[in-house]
Image 1 (cartoon, rainbow, N blue to C red):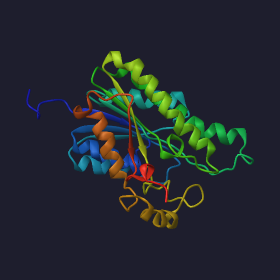
Image 2 (cartoon, rainbow, N blue to C red):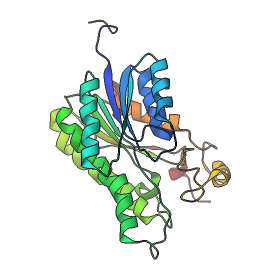
Image 3 (tube, rainbow, N blue to C red):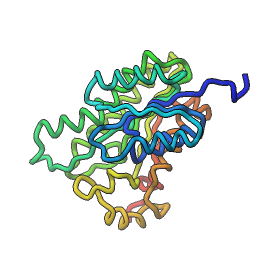
Length: 258
């Protein structure tokens, strides 16, 4: 069968309306994937822009309102993906939230909300996808250098969630391996996204600008840098890679202390 005659491969993505998610949708579209992605209603970014960008590349895209805190909502995303995609070849769990709170001020509900989105949400997505996957499919979870490598004051719940992704992915790699399904993690460093530009909950523009010279590659990452690593892990060149982690941080975490 010629490349033109093959059915399009399919990507299911969460957190697809902006940042790393939007860049990932476009990167996969360039590689021949149709895309079904989830977006949160409270996200101020318009998912129609991502749909447009994917369709301009000649691929199909469909946006689904999604709350990864809800099993029913996640199941609905995968049901729609199963109806609209010829196959589900890649699943990327990217949805996440970031909240600033010292441990002394943190309420139980603050803790549980971040854990529910940033860690349990990943589990829900992979659980719902599992029965729909054929051998050769790949799953990628987006973690963070916070928790996975570094700590971050006033963000203990976020760090705990992102650290937990590492154990989840390693265990699922063992569980899904006999089915020929791979599971990996991408760990972004300092990346210019709507989340990192939030001066209240995260770093903000000024802090990112000041931190850029501390990165060995002397710049803050772009969402496209992370999207490229995700695409690699879902592609044929990574067919013998599972349970692994790719750190996309411009060398920040291996830099010698000054």
